[in-house]
Image 1 (tube, rainbow, N blue to C red):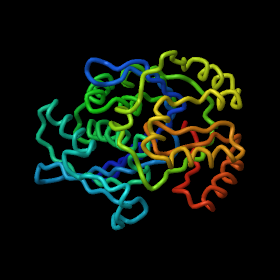
Image 2 (cartoon, rainbow, N blue to C red):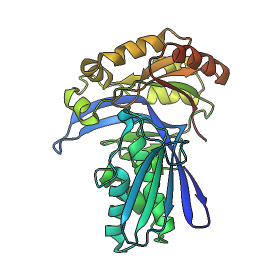
Image 3 (spheres, one colour):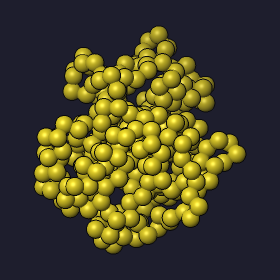
Length: 303
């Protein structure tokens, strides 16, 4: 996450994430699922701009990136601009917690596809907490911001952990940073139709013999990327495939490319392949774009 201070505004670039591993361990009494996941942040960014709002209101506008704040979002990426948006909820939570009465105007330029399992909304919420802590001169600790983030969503704390990769436990909010190679290149494909995270979780089942993330982490830390690709695992993928047959078709397309491993990310519907290097990722992306199966991105595990 990168913060840029301008004369009258604060601009934040905030990344997407991929789940390289996701195991469902149990259904909890609170309705959430106990899980273990490995998340990496990648170089596909939303941009948020924060400026003063004299009315004292929290105002959010959403646009397609690169549009000079004029182009409309694709239908699949349309977002609410009221209290149903995590950005607004994050700003309100921060204001309620601190008792300040400041307003803010937020412009969100979207690059990260919505409802794709890339956590764009969670990343935007984390960016809002971090940016407004500075913009409103609140001086809240990192620990308190993380606590507030966990109230908003399970994977929001990951984007505040100051690490490019982390294991998530609990419902995903208990974060353990890990060190993995930062030169990992991924090709990400996002179909036009997304899936509701809640719906996918409703259709999943806890594993009877859960896998451990540690084997994958060991392979990545020792830069055995071919082995790592074989260890990718997403317990939500079968549920997502039952709800959307296009997920299986998309993963099959990627599997036919020269990738080291492939999988659906999070609750879908985006799928990705791990490549040996950037030139290979560019070649694979070109082939997938030619197939017209969705939006295709090349992204590197960020530093």
